[in-house]
Image (cartoon, rainbow, N blue to C red):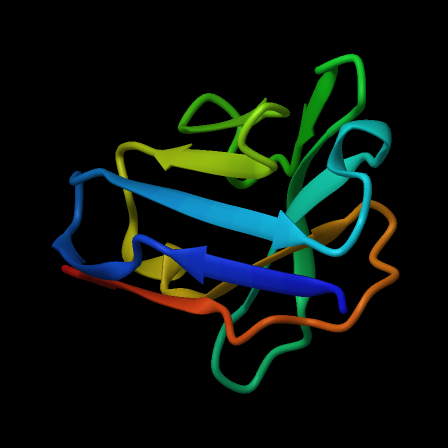
Length: 114
């Protein structure tokens, strides 16, 4: 059974930082590209960043220079370090393979106050 479990969200003031984690089970993590996605209220889910099996990374322009994705294949976990957070980063954050291809987890809520 494939399972994605995101954690680390919360309420933070603008300019603050959070570190999200996503632990994956049920797939061979080390051979899958992984991504972080987010969905803000009233908007479609969007890709924020992804990391390849060789740890190459790509970021949406809106988060470039502020967010960092990383992975730990020994722990089947992908991370998202978010710095200099802005109110427009408020959303539910999800991880999934990249491209997304497995059932979504529950996500983790990130709320940035101004």
